[in-house]
Length: 130
Image (tube, rainbow, N blue to C red; front, side, top):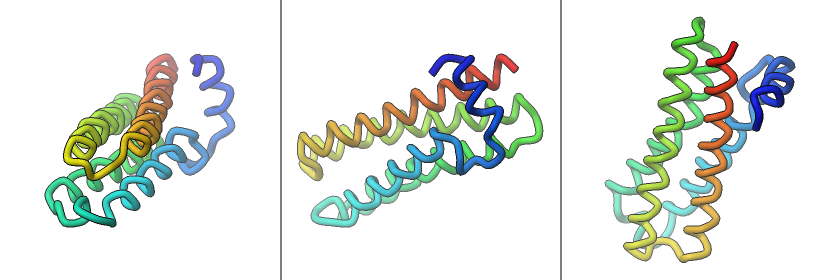
């Protein structure tokens, strides 16, 4: 997303729920919960819980960034959300290596996390340029 495109879309957005990045993060959280609810993944409490916390952190930090009172605080929260995307992706590799998810599910979920990360990056750039 270009800064110009981000600016046009963000300028009309009054709630974090309308941000495409938050919507993508919400879908990712649901995917993470659904995948970790079954089979051996559900019994690997450490990975399951850490992965869920990281995914929830993405959407929570986007919301906090949007609602922040200062530009620097907003960018900090968005940076944390982007970092949590990396954490979810890293944990996804472990879930795949442990055979908790299939190759197809791995690729689909990785694409979701990468999409969220790109959208957050666009928000950071837009916020930084304001």
